[in-house]
Length: 70
Image (cartoon, rainbow, N blue to C red; front, side, top):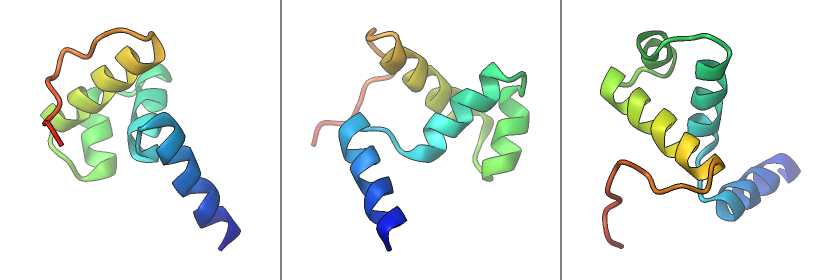
């Protein structure tokens, strides 16, 4: 239970889901977008979007993807 609360707090603080964080880390470790897509059962385009958004977040830069308005 405690770990679930910790994970929710991490998502709220960073605004990023852990799968996106892990996808970026895998990319930096040498995995390509097709391999990452296979790991997470997502399209390669989605893997690329996750990686690009996380890179932008870590560099405090604008994302090349337009976020949907809430």
